[in-house]
Length: 94
Image (tube, rainbow, N blue to C red; front, top):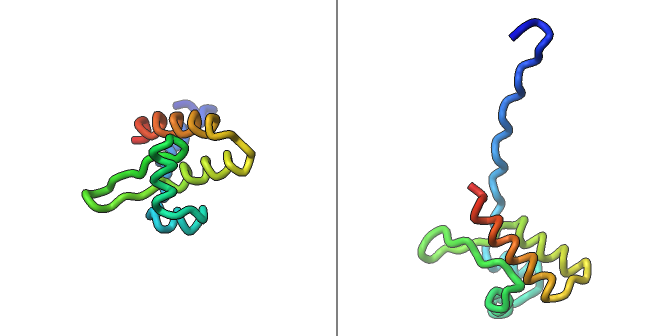
């Protein structure tokens, strides 16, 4: 490196995801747990992340994306596309 070049900045660490339990998601959305799981079955809500055999969570950014789509007036068909994109993107989040 010569005197006029600048060093490369350090790599930015990946942001750790923030998770919320299903009960917290229900409180935020006003949905009941059975309704939340019905939305998952219909493809209009992302599936939870299983952290252990009996412990599931939802990534907060995914919940926010679906809620923002609802606020924007998106249809179920549009949200189904969004959820499919979220689930595809989740696979590459390492």
